[in-house]
Length: 130
Image (cartoon, rainbow, N blue to C red; front, side, top):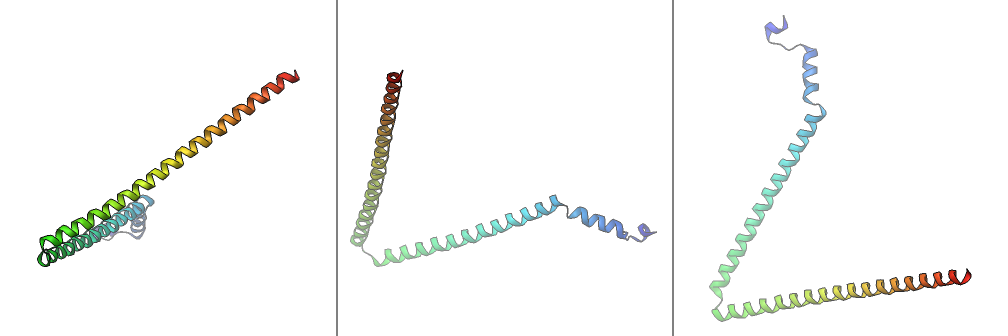
């Protein structure tokens, strides 16, 4: 009689709801929600990046309008000098790291040599006792 009227019986309705919210479906829904959140976050970041780049372009256009060619050469030189300083500091840092690694290697070699000498001495002492 229920089927004739198009009504789902109560027990079947509960069973359908339980099936719908099984663990797999819930995790799938959570994953879908997480991916949509990430996608919206990516869209927001891209939008902000677009506006930042647009502002940068506007600033550069303003600079081009106000600066003369000599000013541009001066700005390029300043940029080059700052880049060179950064590169020098990076090189110094790398040299320091390399020096530290060399020192560490030498320390390990000294310890190894010391251990080998101790081992030889111990072997000689054993032979002397025998």
